[in-house]
Image (cartoon, rainbow, N blue to C red; front, side, top):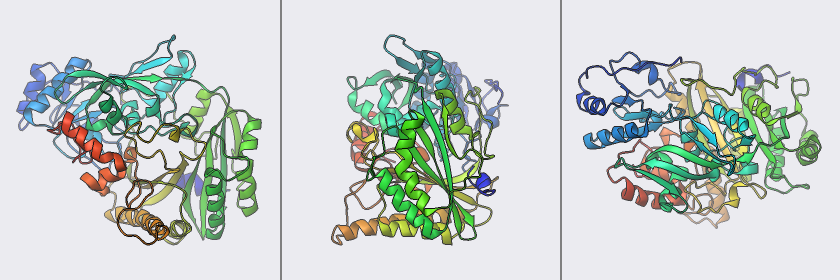
Length: 536
């Protein structure tokens, strides 16, 4: 058994009132009040509870929180803020790792979109119109109830669909059906001048391009239209935990890269969605939990996974006695439920349901980084594993990694051209997420430094390997971003990347110059801004 694995890998409706305006907020509060925009602000009874962030490491105080129930109220809120020089940030679910939905710094106007949460499917076209404040669990249930439809969105049921889709939308079926933003066919959007417009491939196409990957920089979406999919009738959830030494992990990583890179027979099929969850175990061991989801029958899954499991079996270390090891055939809704709450594996089950309340909240204290990579070079693999096995974060910080195979030769992600949207990582094979957390605030600065060093060492090793392969040339290299650094995923926003080119060059790679030009065109005064929006 793996006792450490099971710990390592693991609001009621608030009333709001409009009160007399306290200093120093009179202008924005007066403007919102005069336009009858529901709001909360410092001094009102609900304000403090409404601005608690997902990440308790990063707390910011908005100048006010608009709580609109109609589109004209959103427009009036944007108009007030623009007139007064107050920066605006939409909040669809509040799941920003960097608290960007609270502004990422003090003094912004937050427009909370939680009341925009309807999910309606047109039974003739199978197009779903969804409010940006709808949470993913509720979206999944509503789509299934309206004709057994589905979308390839993320796992966490409390995430708001607005921020999720506008920056990529990695999820449960990405390898099979692509990014959530690839299912987006149009959106209604409030621009910095408070006007309402519809964007699509045929209407304001450049803005629609920018919205799909960098949406928070260009406006407030009030409605999203998606082309849905039939909910997959057959689904396999699977769990295979390995306890490995560093030498075993080195062999296992070569096997993994061969499989995900398409070098096995049979080749990894499009229906396979697979990832590692990795954590140090102690005593010279680390836990590597191979898990994922396959769209199809048990027989087809067995054939598809065989090249990987057979090669890993020769390395050893499979912990077969852990409850739930192996494959679990499930229907679509049950597959989503158990993939999120881990109720089928070990004693990790959270009991969380897909249905989420209007004022659903979740809080933790953490620092997260990401990398978007192809198969790592041998020196980079060695660096990664050496870091994993020989270094430990400062107490009381605990860490784990998730490495998801989003791309590759059979993935749906690169089927859309790199230029089809501002999302810039279609040619990346893997999405890496590095998570460091503590049980409660404060999060030590040494924990940030440690994780930055961990990820930085991997990146430097990979850049050096690419440079050596390019003949030792200095300066710009090929690869994920046409430059010397690896990409990062904005939905795992990392404040330590800084502002401007430092962050934007990671999140949007070679798309960043065009995004900056579009930002100057549509929002020259930076009405919509956080510390890492386009052009900051």
